[in-house]
Image 1 (cartoon, helix red, strand yellow):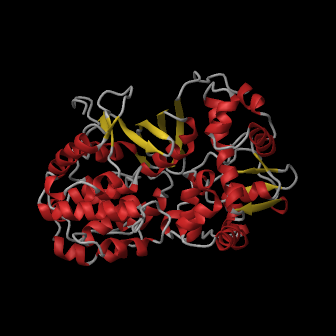
Image 2: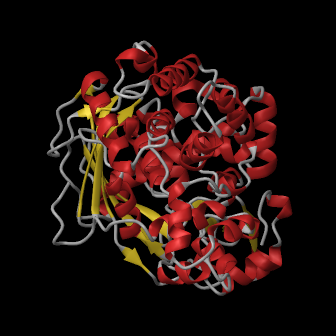
Length: 501
């Protein structure tokens, strides 16, 4: 089912999904019930309303703008986002990623429009047409959802919750919560008895579609650890975060969930210097774990394929690890050109120790923030622990990132970003495509020259040249095919007998 605008939603298909309580469509569209004035996720366990009494909306904000409040039973705002935001990467999808990161709260609608590359008026028209609500309404819906989670899972004072969620005043916070949830903040908190202490530590459950190969995701992240910035152990991964208002850390605890069609959760525990960064930290953790992926669509596409099919059945729900900072991914990718993963991690760790900002954390091993692009742009390439040509390429890349010539915040068009990367000295197709896959969440990239790909194919008994020549059949999910091949080479970081990194 294709879902892009409210007017283009197929009402019959949507209603069938609602009748079957199909969790695959949670976050893809929302069901509003005229007789009750509430909106729900498609899988809501309540009695299915009559088809004449429902309308369908492509965003929670659109349902709220139409006058509906969130269902208290199924919590429709606490769902994975639409996979289409990454698959098509339209202006609306790119804007939604930035809104989730809190750009509207920090920079306003004009700042959001500037990042996406449109005027604020034209962007508002696009969002209203495709998502049923403008940028302010979409940001408001995101603030309400963040506030509800904080109210129900922490003992933070409501004043702190209001500003942590991005509201500009306590009155605005109170009014929005009452309007969206038909309950006051006090009433929402009263329904929960497991609130945590009022500290800068916030624990949330990040919703992901199933199946979900959580341990394979942790294995990948653990294999690429940068000393001082990241640590990992059996079933968990933690790292430092550079956030708009200060540093922080996140620990992710993930496991495998193979019950297809359900909703799984990754536990994310944040320690934040400034609680205003809550929304940004959550969004960055979500994109790190590829939370909005539709694994059933990916798995169905590979069914019957002689190469990827068996791998997809062996590891259902494999994700493409994302990032918490696009600039960091680009720097790490350039350092990793033509060297082993272990060698790249060692060199990057030296770079962090020399130029990263030291921080104090409660997690042993997390000691530094990854150095920002502006800092690295001022480093003498001759002093970097790598070949001179690669050092010059790294400094040139960082200068382009620091100046805004290249932006990896998921706002600009992907093709434009790739073109600009390739214009930089020392940046070739492998680097540009890997950055696009990890930093821009591109689901359809393949690296035909990658040594790991060829080794994986040879190890599986296939002829690398012939398989790579036919890789077009894996569109539009070639990034996931790539991950399945790499996964065959990945050492396990989740073995209980393995020493923690």
